[in-house]
Length: 313
Image (cartoon, rainbow, N blue to C red; front, side, top):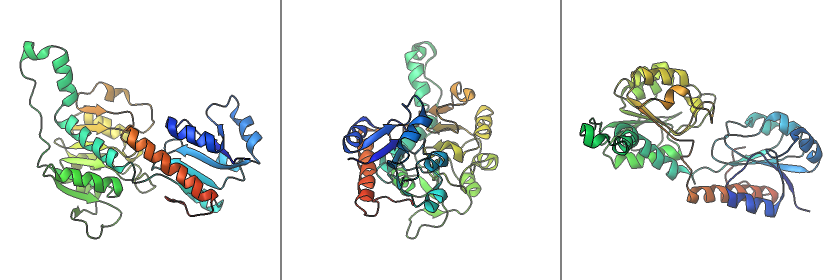
């Protein structure tokens, strides 16, 4: 008999097909009565599959006492209580690195789209304003400017390589200085922002990073600075950011993530100095396939009594 897993939400279709052909999968989000579903699989369920945004609550895990592995389709594990998992002897794996290139690509795209007003230019052309009003207002160049990266992990490192192609001066703020890094280490996020034209957020969501981009950091970034977030919305004080954008105390923002996804603050929807994406930085066919493969590999390693390929706990 195949092993029983609880799947918290829909994933990449090809990954779900493979998962459901290999295991007995119970779809939590599809259940008419989720409590009844948990009761029915309490003795049989040995693993949970989820994504970084949904995670899985301790309450659910406590109702599934035989779960020993959580395999995450994504890099973020902030929606999982890792300390609880350690105490309950539950292994947790994720899918880092395979999505870093695409996330870094979108960070660059958001930066360019924001400072060069790509979306506004598209609308200017589509609405027929070019022949009526002439050339659209001038924009701001990205080449040669100063970039600050908050979080020099895999994504931050991929991003830094791309930014050097724009002749940007790259500095970073991290928990600690990266040995051998060619980029300038800045210990304070506020100091990083003060010296940056573009502040990129690529850090993982942890107790030490949530809310780190606060009013003081935004003030340090200043009226000529751009905020680009491809990490987690929770790393930014969202009301402070919205206020800074509305009052133009920062120049603009490129945002792929939000505090209460999929909800986006209404004020952001009407601002012309913001470019928005629906948390889609890793959303390419190639990366989704790679994420699915690694998620499945983590599961297989666990059931083969081997260390997870990408282990968090």
